[in-house]
Every structure is written in structure tokens, then in C-alpha cells.
Length: 178
Image: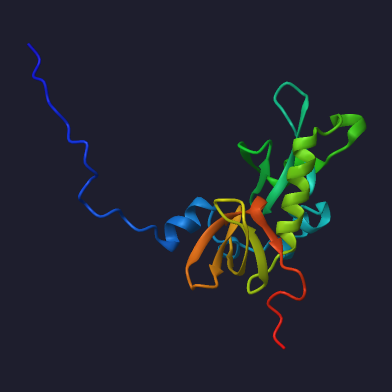
């Protein structure tokens, strides 16, 4: 006969581990500047593989798959196929999306491309807006740009990890010193 065990319904008395900057950085794909800069690689520059660029690559069956560049390094390009799936592809395997050859983009991929393009224009140290967990726009400073998002310093000094789809430049008057 099996032994019956009653489990406590109280909260775990052990303190929860605080998230670290390293774990947040890792969830966002790692610091973008820790790898060779894509601007220095002629292949990346020639193909224009910047965040937001719509590209395609060949599948084993001969068809092509469209995606959006969210990060481009000299050895690999991170291509979002939809909001949840990312593929790492060698730069040589990619070409610009051609509607006649690759088909029309769906609306979701078009929105991903726009969000990734805006993210690509942001720079470390810039005052930005981001959507918090409730969807409220909050002002912060982009502290560290990662491959798929950024570490952002809030006004209260806390640093939060924010995905690239929830980051925008702040209006010019916000954060300006007078």
C-alpha cells in the first residue's frame, strides 16, 4: 500500500532568488557588443542585415522561408520566423525577401519587422520608453543592448530586462535637460 503524504499549502519559507543582471542578459540573448560587430563585416554590410530587415533562406525541400533579422553578427544572424520561433542562420544563407520569389508577408511578420527596425535604431545611453508588465509606458535609460532586447534603468534605479518589441525612443522633450 502506498504511503499518503500531506503537503503544506503555505508559501515556501526559503527566500526567492533575486534575478541577476547576468540571468536577465542571458534571457535576452546575451550582450550584443560581446560578439564581433556586424558593421565591420563586409558580408553583413553588403546584404544590409540590420534589425528589421526581412530576409529569406532556403529550406531542404527547395522552398524558401521568410523571417525578420533581430540580430546580425559576423558568424550568425538571428532570424525571427514568428513571435515565438527564432532561427540562427549563417549570413551567406540569407537573401533579401523577394515577394515574387518568396511570397507575400503576413501581417504578423510585417509588425515584427517594424518593431525590430525601431529596436535596431536605439543606442545604449539613450532615453527610451518601454511597456511595463501592465502595459503602461515608462521612461527609462537603455543601459545595455542585448540581441533580443535591452537592460533598462528605471527612474528608481532598478534595472529591468525588456524585450525588443516593448522598447521605443522617448519623445525628444522627455529626458532633455534644461
